Image (cartoon, rainbow, N blue to C red; front, top):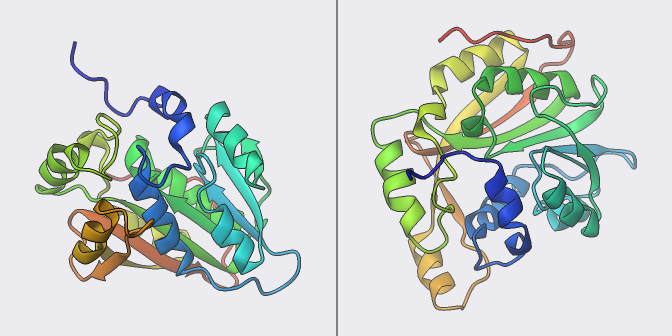
Length: 245
């Protein structure tokens, strides 16, 4: 039978490997470190970082170092159990209807989420709703482009450190123009950059000389990209913004 793509059950099946730096989620360790580089230290003792689709809580050591209360949201019970073991305040729920209050977050991290849902703009709307005015948003996703499928799936799912086979469905990859237009409507100032793993870091990781591979920024956003931004001061609470494409 053909491999069922984008099946959430895969995450439960691989739950024991979340914290293995060379396991099935190796690249998520690299991305967690990259996301943390764009989160400022907590500005007050009660600062909250909401981690959407947190999985096994790989952001936990970074969030702890930065001084936030780490609230993780995910639909997978197995991943949330692992996240709790690493100090995450785990909440079971959908990223399309997050069971948290408006404006509760100083930071929202939405990594490797948008390319797994049918309505990425609705998820962005939830990010905007959760953020207080001036709050920080960090995202990353796979672009809807001619090269993304062959590279991210055809090559990426076959190389060491890449995503587990079948974890992505190219039909769900993200339209960057639509995303930026939606961000503007939602009161989010968002800029996109391309991401790629360091070649030297990959070699060192493969040889067992590095636990994490540095993710390098580049101007081209046509495969893996990140988004960094803030919610505009004075922006109204966000409602659902329907997709337009």
